[in-house]
Image 1 (cartoon, rainbow, N blue to C red):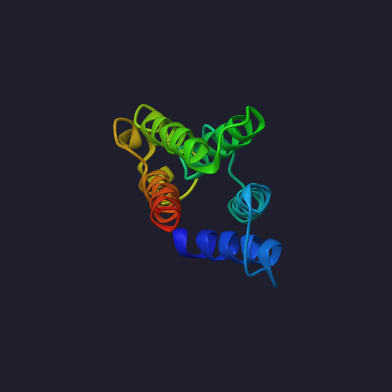
Image 2 (image 1 turned 90 degrees about the vertical axis):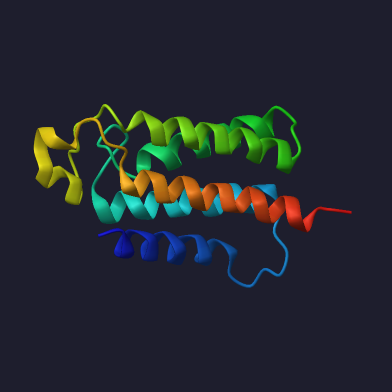
Length: 136
């Protein structure tokens, strides 16, 4: 079920970054925003529905805040990953309202959403790559 959502996210993010050989913090924010907007459009979900949006939305909010507070990209992404992790864990007590987990009804309560988890892993990977690329 997440394949079309991630496909849309990557297409939307890629369109923001098309033709660029180097990207900066502003590009990352624009790409993440485009990815989130694509997921929302495709999945018709919102924060609180127990989906990947519960991870991506707070992560993006934190990235924007951290960068506007003057943190460098690595520090901002470290906070972004923490926000993503909190968002991911916030899905555990939720009732799934969208996606395949919604078919479980009340039985979805008490379990972490798989889409939220995979989104967290992707955001953490972004931090890992940035740290690796910025090593001196």
